[in-house]
Length: 128
Image (cartoon, rainbow, N blue to C red; front, top):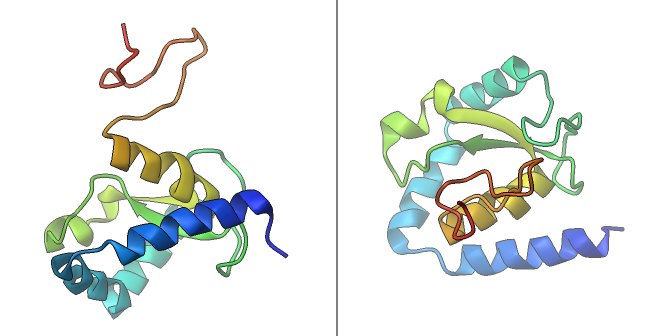
């Protein structure tokens, strides 16, 4: 059974899917290509099947917060060159991707706080 936190993140993800534009639905098809599957595998191998955010070991499947997600560091928004750029990919766990990463994409800044107690992202409204 999934944890409650995983369900809340899953609910957020479901809302995001339902709000996609027709244009976004078109580029989503790129995830079904053999080229993407090859790049995805290469990114996971390069990153040692470890989340590049929280460093947990990634699992197969889609039902665990530790499930492997290959994330585009810079949002591609349908740009095929950026979509298929291995240097623009990083392995992360589902929990990081559906939490901090997507939250940052929606907000426009990373909400992480550094060891000094200040936001690490200069775009954060609380950055000094």
